[in-house]
Length: 426
Image (cartoon, rainbow, N blue to C red; front, side):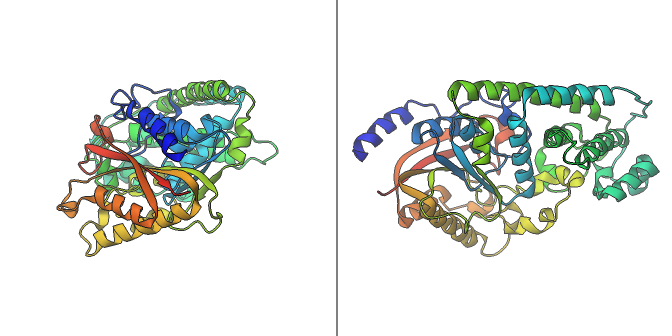
């Protein structure tokens, strides 16, 4: 029975072009998975097809390296519960804000958009929008002005923000931030549950209005912009709220079509969002997961937490400082002795935990690439991961290589990656 089931499954898997080279956020701006920007995410159609083929409605889908929640959102859309985990505190924030967004009523989102438009479009002052030299401390602080600097100090925003955003852009961002902060401090009984939606829109525009226009790795590596250029943050924020509203409406329309009698709030409530180490889930019982889909870190290809530098300016988290060293195989440790052995050891511990959690006969899907940096020269990373997964007790039933067509999605020189499906023995 198992062989027959897998034979049918393989035929279906082989009929899918896993490249999805026509999918990116610019072509599908109203896909909720396109909001907000996050580094090196896999296309939403990958978990979409895998969830449909490898699980049933009501089952529990897990992603131990959840990122901005692509797997979780696709699981909810198809009537599955999910377990989301990520060590990146800013990724976890994004996940929670996305869940609040898709769980909110469409009327509430529309009312919030009208309120934000009315407030931000009134009382605009004249601005000095001319460009000026970046990186210079005296210029940065003089341009920011006393009021901006006082608000930064009072609220705990990181002062480094003055080096990344034009002074007028920063003033607009602070105006939005202040509104969100005021909403968050209203008594719970009186406040609308839409603070998360506002925060989602806010962090989603930070890269767009930042003066550093280079590749996102410039932000990751703390390369401040040399020229400060003005970008209209308030207009970008309102446009992003409108986009979120439309994306939320589209997401719910799809949910209603796929789940006639399910309530989205109930599915979200029955799911788990967790911030922590993927190597150990002490709160989860053996064989409690029906399907695992994940894209683990590639060997020394990315620093996921540090890519969230702009988010951390406005919503600082101690984890931004402490946790980058605890990521699995981060790029910043590529020159450290023993990093390769550490990477494979951490991956093995994670896979062992996935084996414990997964039900018998269930599937474990990973999407992983081979980096082109010096650290991985002479190492077939993908093959070694596969061999170790099989040693732990999984059987490989499917493997295909997919190309990554859009350079904006590539990480660490990776232009292709493998999708591998394993099965736990019955």
